[in-house]
Amino acid sequence: MSPLDYTAKELDALMDTAADIMADPAKYSHACNGKILATLFYEPSTRTRLSFETAMIRLGGEVIGFHSADSSSATKGETVADTIRVISNFADIAAMRHPKEGAPMVAAEKSAIPIINAGDGGHQHPTQTFTDLMTIRSLKGHLDNLTFGMCGDLKFGRTVHSLINALVRYENVKFVFISPKELTLPSYIRDDVLKSKNIEFREVTRLEDVIGDLDILYMTRVQRERFFNEEDYVRLKDFYILDKKKMALAGKDMLVLHPLPRVNEISTEVDDDPRAVYFKQVKYGMYIRMALILDMLGIRVA
Image (spheres, rainbow, N blue to C red):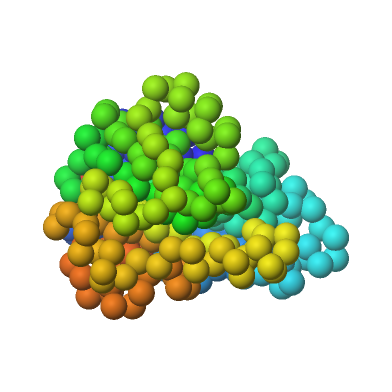
């Protein structure tokens, strides 16, 4: 599953369902009675895994699964394809996170049940993208006519790549990419997604120079697990730190998002700023995953 599996119209409908769940959770509390979600997490996760599990439980369903490759038959050499063939006998739907790009797609090809991609390597993180879109639409009221600043690890950041792919389908969106030269946006995003669609963007190094121009600032951490050597990680991990001084340069309506976990890239002194919405983002993520589970199971709640 990719964000592009949904048209902009279908994404809007998904977000409408999520908004309805937020407004009337009791109406949906038994929608998945008798259904089972399998969470197949070959990589560690806190927010995404627990968000999926909570989403299913709040819909009245149940959850099975594993939280790391070490606790699965992958340690015995079982393939993803064989694992999902087995799991298909137990569950009605599965959410998979895997360090290898394309693994959830392989699973989907062999699966008898719907597979949700919960992140595959540095490639995609579609449900985080749905979370981001839901957060922005809920707080801004729209997704078009906005300037998005993406800051930090733009080379390996799968959340950034997925979000860009989704946002370019909305009208009059602009981007400012803020990163050190070692972590700039991959050429396949720059050329195949942005330039090919004539999307306006610029690339800069200093956050202070552009923060005042942004409607949305999307902060990301520099991910140790994506680096091949510790020296490069240590050199770049604190390249950007958002603090009160930088926030003072931003517009009063700018929103700060972050897919979490945060390390050092946002100072805790920013947490109480009403423009910092990254913890609200987590709750929006649960509701959009509830809507996604219902949609992929073909369940409609009147």
